[in-house]
Structure formats: C-alpha cells, structure tokens
Length: 266
Image 1 (cartoon, rainbow, N blue to C red):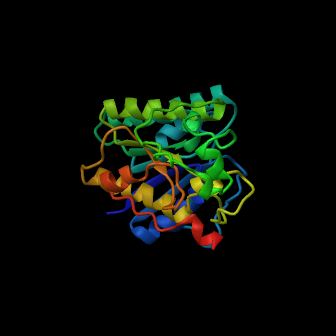
Image 2: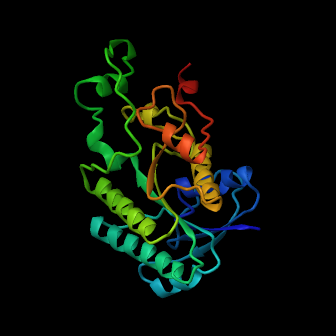
Image 3: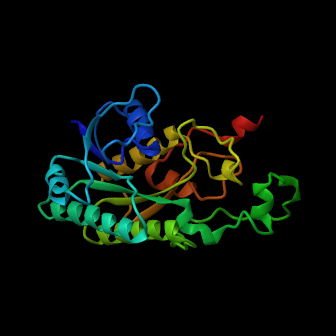
C-alpha cells in the first residue's frame, strides 16, 4: 500500500526535506507537490515527487478535484498577509473536511511554528532565556522547564497569529473526526546547520531528517489508530539546550529525533 502524500508547498525548505527523508523511513511514500508557478525547488540532491503548478486560492475547484486519492496532506504553503493566509487555511481545511464526509478523507499535517508561542520565551530580554541565547550557560541559576507541547498559542505578531489560526483549525478538524496535527516547526533550513547569526537558533534548530521523523511518527500513529486528537507538537531536534517539550511526542507517537545542534559547536 502506497502512502499517497500531497505536499502543499513541497518545493520549499520543509517540503523538500520531507521528499528527501520520508522515503528513507518508509519507501511507500509517494509525493505530489503543489506549488506556485515558478517556485524554486530547494531540495539538494535527489528528492522524489511529481509537481503541479497551481495557486490554490485562485483555482479552488481544481485544488479540491485533486484531493481524492491522497492519504496524507501536508500543508506548508504561505502567501500574502495575515488575512490572505487565513483565507488559504480556510480553503485547505474546508476542502479536506468536505472530502472526509464521504469517509475517505486524508489525514492533515498543518504547519504551525515555535513562533505560535513567542510570548512564552524571550531571547531578547533579561533572564534565563536571554542568557541561554547568548550561550552563557554557567550564568543560568535556574533552568526553565521545557515549554509544554500543550501550551496554547500565544503569538506576538502576524506570523504567529497565522500559525495560531492553523492550530485552531486543527482542533476543529479533530472535533469532526479528522486526523490532524499542527507541527510547530523549529529552525529548519536547507543546509541543516544551526550555525547562523539568529539569536538562540541552536535551541530551536531542527534537522530536516527530524522534521520528516515527526511527520512519519504522526502519520503512522494515525494509521494505527493511536494519534491523540488535536495535538500541536514542537518539531525540534534532540538538542542539548532545547527549550521546548519534545518528550510529549516521543511518548505519544514515537517521535525519534536523531540530531543535536551541539554537534556543530564542539
């Protein structure tokens, strides 16, 4: 049985990583990627998939017609301002849920971000998080507890609000019996390195292979009937100085991250 997977925005950083690493976890994954016309493919090396150029907001009927036959939909795309993003999110979830009424709806993995909970940690102020971001580990008197995977969204800007909107839709989808997970992506980049100028990046970094491991864990839990409803999992590698709760998805769905940002700081 093939795992027919529709990636909405599959040529981007996260989508190209899924196309690269999911087949390593299970060779039954088959991909179709919908992207805006002219979108560059960020995959490095061989990444499986066929491609459809489409602006789903401008061609909603064509998009809906494509959905039957897919087992998994991964919603990664972004466009426009907050209002435009929310309209696209409405379209994606309403289309998937309409198909689900027939009893043949796919599971949906929808992109959130650690930025959905930006108000829970502050790298640019005083305190433990600021010291951690500066890698002044010996100066931290009391280490903060991991930010819970069950923490509701607490955004501070439009980007965070669009992710909170996705998470609200995941909850509605679960209420209607659809398998749905919001992935609170950490720092995913095409080169898979935590060595950037971004403050505290090593604490939120996620290797593309670990991003794929989270999607695979969620989907296989769904197939086994073991996926908890309406979860919002942080997708972070197994970093020594991680500030987010990744123990919950480890325990609930068997998430197995393999990488640690500190490998690059030795």
